[in-house]
Length: 499
Image (cartoon, rainbow, N blue to C red):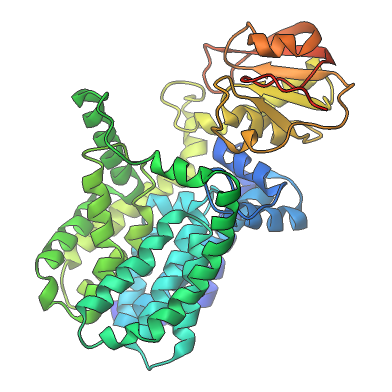
């Protein structure tokens, strides 16, 4: 029965993927959720295209710019690349499993990926994750063909291009050539590939590195400093805080992957790592490309804070490897349970906006969608007080600036005042306004009703217009001012007058 199902699936795989894509695009239109802060932040990047940005490489901005140039600056257009990239991820995971282990394993790998709640989010929320997952999956497929198929240099080059695109999505993609190098060094039969094929694979990656390095050199290596800030043990943290951070990481994995599948992947990974030398070369390759990295990042989470999405790229090869084990008759029962639990969780994920509305949990502490709500309402409230502001200055988190930039009707360039005087977001790297300085400025602050002294000194006249309930942190207020007579654009330290 399963063999027949896998055969039918293979025959109509293109139609199946198109059907999944159509359903996910439909969800983009009907969900009614605002952009989260990261999405609007990356959209703001897309309006000022560059070779790199404060915290990440440029791929997410390039893709959003491509989509919005065609479909306009709206929520669906911003999120459309996620649906496209997510479908390509499914296709390449299926293709890699098909090449390595056959039709049955390919169907299992596809179903397992569809049964993970994080695949729902990765096909819906447009951040750096969808392009990273997509290009990581592409790399796995082309490297599998290059290593275990008929010798062909084009597969090495395509794998290098995929990794280069993954690197332009997120710095963690540098682990791909590193793990491939380890695999080739440990495999005596394929070590000869280091002389030519591996160098061809690395060529596109090195070319992609050049603009990133040049940009960072021109900006005091700001992205490198930001990345380094994510690593290292902070001695000031208490044991309680460390346990909370570790528990948060593992809790995210249970929710994003599903409890049964997470336990299954970890069990398989520990078992295969213990017997690494006895594994077939394809299993060794997949183990290094995902499960080993997954175990490493989960162990890292015990000593320092690790974000919940960091391990997610590593699950693709783990699921392909697991599908190969199923082909051998292993883990069949737990995989069936994992699929049932996973699909229940993914169904709930899609139904969550409706469930929250029906149960009247909106705007309560139990509403997990709180950060998707009310940003457009805040923008409309500000426009009632100050219609179509030409210059907007925000004081607070970068998300306040990016959400207002997106949801204000004219989508103006929004500027941000950083009280520390440090560069902590892309907004501090962009230039201050040079034109229209005779116009009034709308100042929106979420920090305090009293504006910082440098901001007060920068204008001849300040008028407090109104206070608005904060869209995310309900007890707090957002304070709206109008400023007239710009002496200089406010900057924390030191004052710098615009010439």
